[in-house]
Length: 636
Image (cartoon, rainbow, N blue to C red; front, side, top):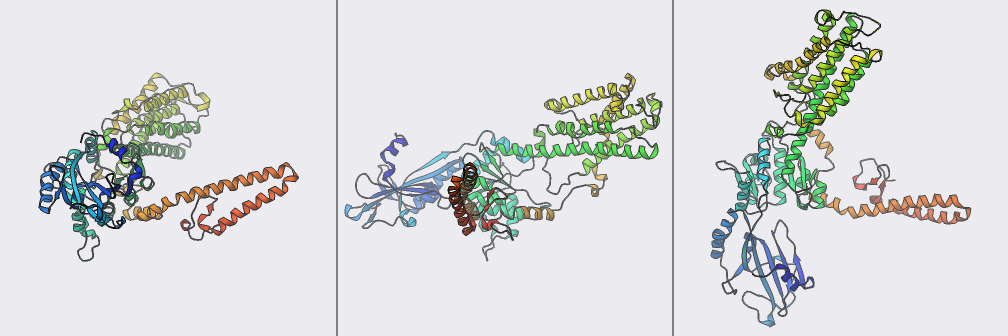
């Protein structure tokens, strides 16, 4: 058009705007009524989804810019020849239209709306009708370069990505193909909101049928021209589905106020930090500060890494505990002595708890985490793989420890001395071998998914290397110069070589342990598992106060101003208390003033008592509304 939109905005100041019909997900358009500069009357400008606005047009501008009739046949031709090809190329088509409201005395044209009295601007259906189409434009919203790779990572990680959008179905299909959600040759569904509801609802009652829903959602990949209610229906239906062995874990992204119910219903709600509304952020669990889909992949990666770090630490710690307890109990019963002294066990405990937790928990997430399927919600904390590794490595350490206990003189040339009041090389060698096996088993614990190369990625975890080397150096010092403090006696070079061989043997033995197929082991030995029913019960109890629709979310938002006002009163109460105490301590002449101020505080307290919904929960230090208190709680 040869002009900048800022020029038009300057020509039409804000004072000239008479009425605005804001955009929403139902009408999928917005309209503005401005006063005409050429004379009396108004002009309505509308822009929005091409199918929606085009269906309200009775006229269209010709080549000379004059309105002419716009029959249905011409509209269908524009849809098939213009809108659909543009949408198939990934463009979001927008129709721009207008309508002039001219007084009947001014001689309105055939496309104008004549009025004798001021139009009823609240009657939107009448106002936004019989429009004149100006143009149809296509807007390209390019896919971020990192999104296709992020979606591929999600798919390889066992995460199914579905796109729910208000765009045209052709636009949605094109964008989904560019992102990698849809691939050539795949038989997945791309549905509009109307068709989606038609398939999942019972024709007789109009209610969502879970049986019909279960026939649709496994193959659904794109839901176009959808409403927030469709999004909520999709989320709640997948969560309620029973067609899979374990319930699906659903994560949802959203940025609008209407996305609140879906964000709360989902297991994990992601809100947009830049474009998201306050309602969406409050209803979500995680806020994406950069509004980038790839951040979800990072969240998945870090979540799995945290879970794996806990598993690594448990596997390592339980192995040490099993060996230490078994050695202490057995030796006390058989030889009435223990090769592991109390001070030595404190050192082992330091290795096992503090240093090991730092070493194993600082492992950075890698892309390998996204190359396996996600854990189920019922996965035991200690599964059969971890149990096999714990028992297998503990068995090796126990065999070596007891062999040294009763045959150390033959292997390491250390005389067997039970019950000696002074430190002996025999018990020192056992203690040293145990620590060496523990240190090398710490390397084994870095991999808990039967990976053969336990050194993979070791160079990326400098903290692990530093802690491991530091622990080894401290062990050398304790053994060689610990003396009576640590109940040790210095070992010879040959003794150290034997201990290092036993420790390195843990690496070799671990390769044999992970070769044992888990199919031959009974799964009943797993520890810490839960059933789906137990998990659902816990989640229902935790989220009981969060279940609700959009109205509940909006109600919480409406209370914000009320909360701020009450907090101001609370601060005022505190200030009055301080002032009263200060004045009472200054001089008796201020007693009268202090009393008056106390009465002022009493007035505020009486006001709060007469308005229980505005009461403050002093125990929590936060504002609590009367309708949110538990049964039996009385407002003070």
